[in-house]
Image 1 (spheres, chains in turn blue, red):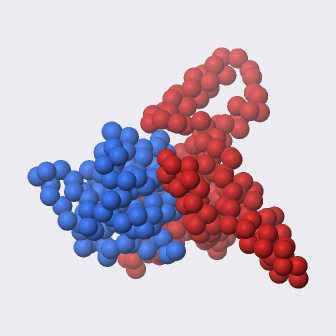
Image 2: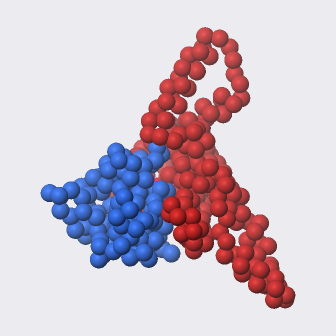
Length: 107
Length: 211
């Protein structure tokens, strides 16, 4: 699996609505989501780098997601089909981020 | 003395490291790769399975096929952090390991090998280490994986734990100044702390240069 390839072209950005907080990229508002968990090792700048690089999120979105992970202990970083989310979780693991998949609405 | 990464005019990224720093980074990268292979049974089991898969005996081949399907659960606490359960549901987590753990391990081992090759290519003494953007990504991932292993050995579990470890170390130094002592274990953890700080600083500097 070419996990080091970004899922979207860098710079394309994600659909965001900053007025209502962070809106993560969603294919079809699919039933699964990728959750990234806080840990004491990953540098904040590295987590932002990974979210921008892999998901193609803008700096603002990536920073908000990173802060959510840091302050709340976890954040949903993507949604989609089970297959899509499995790919995302595997990619997060390849970057050394602690990620799990879960059904949307579990939290 | 290390110098931070910077973007050069030709677009490449360069830092300066002395021979000792390079040797230490290569060593912890090697140890991380060895730990992953040993804990996931990638060396020995892989070889046994390959031979069994080529066996004349169809039962042996079938056995090898099934054995190869079970990705081993990591038992070392650091390897558990590098290969975390992908789901709170144990069945789903096991299935995820079966499908993806080998690829994930191959990627991590390849990153670590590449870091060692880059350091080797830069020579033994104080010198510039030059990366293109593809190598920069590899180095970021590998440094992070090594830091995860070192953090586990230092017992870092929550945000701020490293500051505590660092503070305890400084108190320890002051106590040592007051009276002679020098146990091996203490020296060992001082080295781990120093290497962890060096790798964190290097990773942060590379991220800044990429930004």
